[in-house]
Length: 247
Image (cartoon, rainbow, N blue to C red; front, side):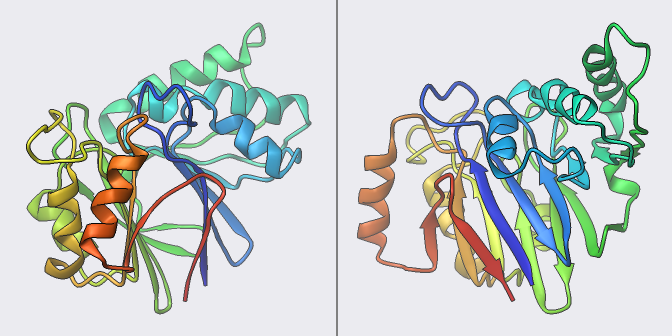
């Protein structure tokens, strides 16, 4: 089983919600996907243990997806973490992750625990989970990911409009999370997906369940109205605190 704990589902400058992130648990292994503003607090609400998170995956390195990293690792150091914290990120952004870690370690030269920096596209697994990636259409290099464990499968888009590669990656996933910044394709946001494009993926890619997240700030009522009109219970609107289990 794969368990997904929704830590945040807000867009970049959301005044009400933590930035989009999920905590994935499988066979006792915990993977944090993205860590923007408000996400470290959500993690600490779940556990004060320095070793609570086993690994981190960054879909891309815009600040709303990685800006919480210094606080996250600073807390781990303060609480006495010693075990390694592998971080997977786009191949072209590992130097920026290293800079964030150096900022967190200051005034020490290094953190008191190892942090292996791994290019996301060259990894085939994270803990017990099989990993595959595909680039989406976004302003920054963004790698959507698919995690598989037995018959359970999860697709998580990060930011960006779907591409042929990301469509192929998500095909047949039991559960898919896709960013849906714009409530309508009549008002698109550059580098982001919209309600009509994303909801069509349920059938076109044979998804079991589709969750909309990273939605426009204070547009919940608009999304709710459109989902009611659509009338498909396999398509859900993500909210922080929800738990999704994939078997």
